[in-house]
Image (cartoon, rainbow, N blue to C red; front, side):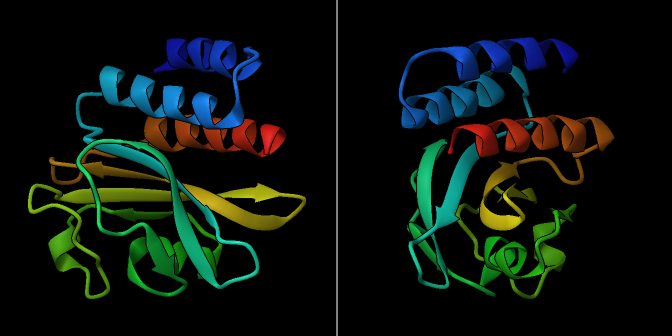
Length: 148
């Protein structure tokens, strides 16, 4: 996973739009990490207490707007903490995007101390996420906060 940081740096250092950078990061993660089956960004929707879907790679989702507190993403919007779900079927407040999803990790993105969004990864594998995933996603979230 370490060589991904260099490739991520190239994407973030390029002159393409923020949206294109985020899309390319989603595609890179989806292509390179076999258990990343859906990769996307959600961002705070203006002044509303809800998240709006940004760039993503994976199956289409009906969850283009997520109220704070609803599902894993909505909980992260309120808690400001990373949420790793080893088995989504063991979660009461889970918004199912796909019957194939078995695990999820959601990490908040902060800018000037404010939670502005998050990266959301779904996996078709139970309990696949490790410390290496957390470190990689922290790196990405820090990079995103620099360009938003």
